[in-house]
Length: 208
Image 1 (spheres, one colour):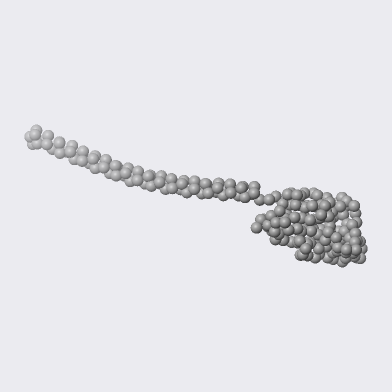
Image 2: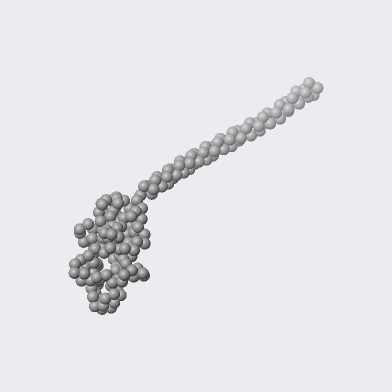
């Protein structure tokens, strides 16, 4: 083989090596492109998730702010009362409205110890409860809860023993300006002292 032929063969060999290296580089390039495409897809998906989370976070923050506003605007209405420190009240010849003179709490100033009336500041659902003790033996214990001029609850029991009580509770729908109060029936009495045996409580559940 001549020198020229040898040189040609060498060039062919080198060219084959270059082609092989080029092919390898192209394969590496394609693999990198695939990896880059996959990475871009993952980044896009992550960005989408981040956007969704940001949207949900913004929505939650807005809801919290709205609840804060609603809570700030909601009337603060609640009372808890004791009747007296004077002992036995009654019996009387007629029904009387009980006037609870010991104000434990009176948020919103909704209960008047002077009149014995709770006055609703807003239309809503209100919860009321009471406990009344009588220190007489062999006597009825009768108390009525009124809504405006309508009796909505009559609680009574008869006991041969002294120092027994009657309790009850209910929820009323009241309009703004409506009143609720407790009435002691004629012929009955009620007892209270520093131990707060006789109490009247109420609060606004929610406006309507």
